[in-house]
Length: 131
Image (tube, rainbow, N blue to C red; front, side):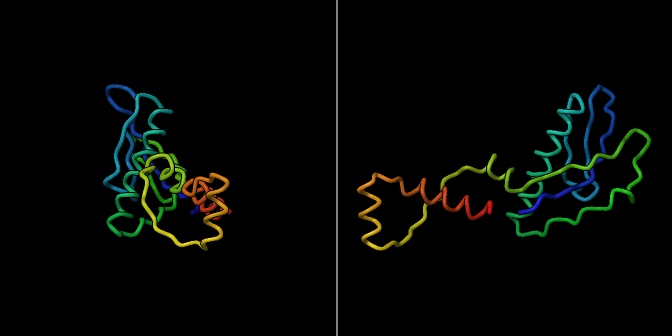
């Protein structure tokens, strides 16, 4: 899956730090004590919002052209880079049971080598996904 880019508005918070909103994802709000933390929190909040939309089978919103967004007086525009595959790897590691069929000879050969079937399948799937 390709990387996504969404414009975010970073607002100076009265108590210090920043709060962040996304024009294209209105339900996505977050904050941070400084610029670095606010950016990291924005990536995580965006990931949560987009994966929730995905689970509810809602389309992901199109990203606005940053040049069409005029920040309010207390805000500035930052484009957030988001990688859905990396986010899912980091946040969704729940194991899912799969049933599969292989030829008997292959099963016997793999068992004689003490291969971990789950690990081999994961490695093969990752190499296909990342290719």
